[in-house]
Length: 205
Image (cartoon, rainbow, N blue to C red; front, side):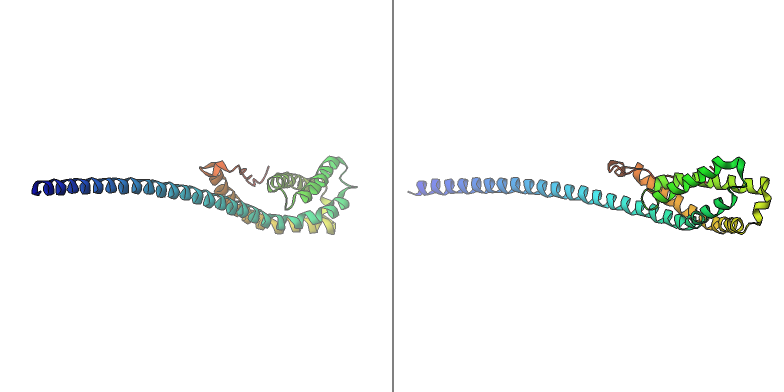
């Protein structure tokens, strides 16, 4: 009987040890799966969070470009408003610059149609207008000096001079915003979102 009891105790011990090993192995296996699941979820959350942050950063930078360009538009609007008056005043005298006057009229109309809608196109049109307005003022100064005695022409020249420093100062802020935005658009992961690069505002073109 004693030997049977000993065998019974030994068997119970083995069963208990085996059960413990099985339970520990099961728990260990479950923990690994749980850890892998947690790690996977955390990785997904990090990627999603990074994506959201990058996208929001691009949107903010794009809005910064639009906002700083809006400051230039506000100053340039003062020139735009005066163009019809000055062209009307000089049209009959500047017979050799008809194409220049027509180009300015067309560019003015185009500029107004782009305001608040397409910054890149508006930048390009503004640069063309810069060139044409400079050509107009140069022609008046060199070939038609008597036109400078007309009040409308004087007012236009004054507006151009008045807004020049404002535009030059705002151009610095705008181009800085463009540089920051374009850098983000070209870099990873910003280049995955399909944002278009903004155009710099160059003067004297």
